[in-house]
Image (cartoon, rainbow, N blue to C red; front, side, top):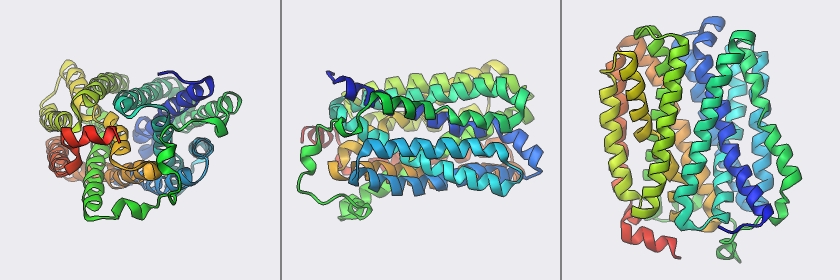
Length: 404
């Protein structure tokens, strides 16, 4: 792709920002056990900290998706980063669970807005037939952010406690500062902008404008709900489960998370390449079925090596699919509601899927790890059924959408 310097810097900003919002979100996973002990709360209450973050993401997605389609997309993008960075850092002053909930909700608003707006920026700079690969790169940078979160947790938390870790949430402000120096927001290109000429700015209601669009939007929302439920269920609770029930140390559970994230990165690279080549219907079918099987089989892993290998395999399939949603939604909806579609659909998934942390905490207090894995595996079967119901995902129709 040949991009001007300004557009190249805008693309870099959008991709890197996805890594920083994952960096901030994952601080909770590495702080959850200490947070529960320090604040004297139940596992269910601790799980709700993740759930309320995802509710904030839904609000942010609805709000900033509309604003980005109506105003300057890149300027809106900068504000989303500022919001989640400052709110994350303010968690340092947490004294009770309710203050934590408020700050996580506000941070969620920024993160929820950032994702869809960043995807819209990428889609305006990258040809549709290459969006699968760009989305996979975007997802990989997000996982790098998660790895950095694990590394920071290993160094910062022992010295300054879990509160000190959240001060690192200010790092994304460096991207905002750099973008002000390197990107002219008014000159960021959008080669699909001609599609939106003389058309009224998109609204959320446009996602439900016809029976087919209603079915498509609902099905995609089910898929993203399962995607988020599986991801947050794994990343927020499995390290704690391993520490408590498998006798794994904190340092080894962090190693498991890094191995799992590396598996996710490889899965995203693979998924993005296959998505552009074969289309979503075939690729999602393979990955969703493999996710259901691998998650269930992971409950039988008991040794350190099987946990590490199993985590990488589960990560490969479970989160490899995340790379496809931005590319798929961008092609399934018209330009004028591109930001709205990406933000609304993903953040509905985040809001509902975020309850998986609460549900898993509830299951663990009343049952065992095997029940948790059966619960997660069944979700991927549900996602497969939803995906197969989307008419425009047949290879022939999907290819035509890319050429419109």
